[in-house]
Length: 120
Image (cartoon, rainbow, N blue to C red; front, side, top):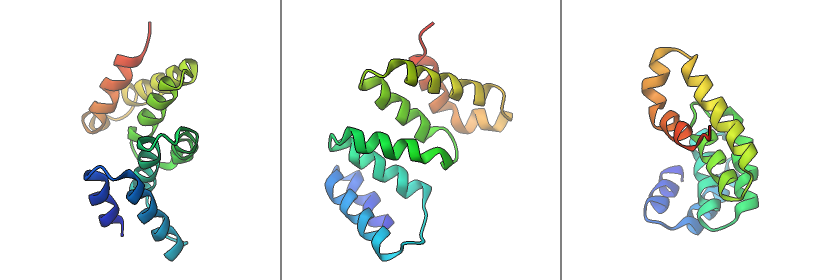
């Protein structure tokens, strides 16, 4: 079902992505997927369900890497919550600056995005 949800999202069908992921969760209550959770948050965001998307992004603190945090900060910024967004962008920058070198290579897209959005 996660594969189906990914395909639906790639086709731009955020609503069916959300429905499919909710069905997956109902059918497998113990199943946890960071990628599925991020996809769920993104599908909510694309549908304009901003409050629900913000809630899901905030719950993705366990997500490996910086993508979920960067997307969360972008949505915070979009909704006018600039200070919160700036704090997260700075945390992303610091985590990658002071992390292992391979992390920079793997997370460069989110590092660059965070740096572009930081106001000095």
